[in-house]
Every structure is written in structure tokens, then in C-alpha cells.
Length: 109
Ligand SMILES: [Zn+2]
Image (cartoon, rainbow, N blue to C red; front, side, top):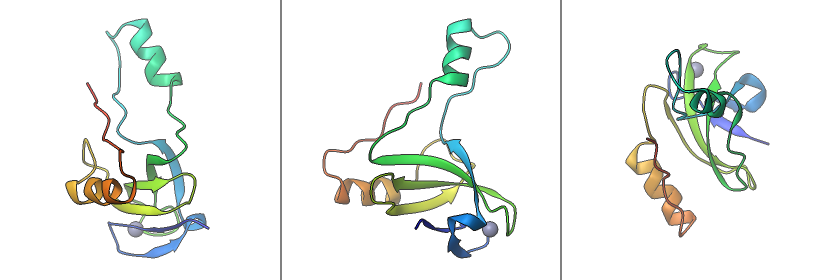
């Protein structure tokens, strides 16, 4: 069972109280971008076995969006944080690195 804590209101609950919103930290392409970039934005998502960053909405609570860093294999949640960030906070990246040696934050152009 996946247990998440909403960083906006502080409530900890089962995932059924939340609604998943897909991959976090994707670079968006809009009008004026190349077809290849827009295709990648729409259809090419990561589906890792391990550390993953996702968007979640506290649908049955405060209604706000946030990001979660978790392991897709063990369901371990490394942390949740504001959706108004371009990458995870350093303390969460450090926590992941301590538990998953060799892991590294990917580069976003
Ligand atoms: Zn909330």
C-alpha cells in the first residue's frame, strides 16, 4: 500500500485519497516547437523500475498538486514536496542516494 503525505496540508493517507498525475519534472513543449520535441513531450514517458518522480493531487483533501519521489518496486516514499519546483529538493536527493547507491538525478534540458 502506498502511503503519501501531502506537503501542502500535512495529511498522511493511503493513495486512494490522492490522484496520480503522471511523471513529474517533464519539460513541456508547445506551439513553435518541433514535431519531434512535441511528440516526445506527449508520448515518451519514463517507466522506471526503481526511483521515480510523480505528480499527485490531494483529490479528497486540500485539492492541491505536489510531487512525490518514490520507488516503484518497494513503494517506499522518499519524500513529497512542492509542485512549484524544477527538481527535487537536495534533502530528498540525498536520502535517495543514501538508500540507492549509484543513483543520480537526471539532467533536464
Ligand atoms: Zn493536502
